[in-house]
Image 1 (cartoon, one colour):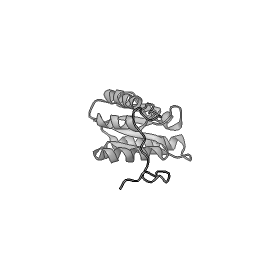
Image 2 (cartoon, rainbow, N blue to C red):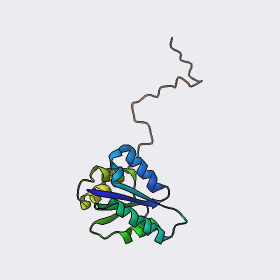
Image 3 (cartoon, rainbow, N blue to C red):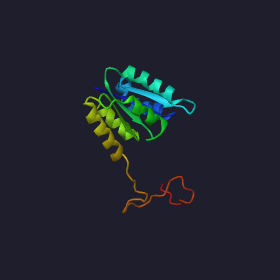
Image 4 (tube, rainbow, N blue to C red):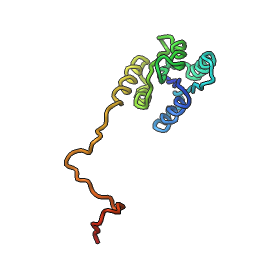
Length: 149
């Protein structure tokens, strides 16, 4: 089983945890969050991360961070050992949900699935109305004078 640690700028980590537990209530025991506040030193973030890792023991852990090169990502890299604890940055909801869906798989497989979930979850959505769909006037539109009785 793979545990997940969300390590991100406040309040993103705890917000993502809430979204995850909303969709997967049973995941609350596999999921820890550390919100990095602006006043926290890197040492304080690292101590909070180590405590979260202890709560996830004995599981392997995937740390998900928000932005590469920022404090959460830098601290996560110090916490990772490359064997039982790995890091993926750029966390989004599709990444998190995919990782939770496959948390029963080995850590390397969860890493691969999380990255796939993140990239497949990002797409451009059509900004124009699909063809062959007539626009129906709203019944609340004051300019709509077509009353049916």
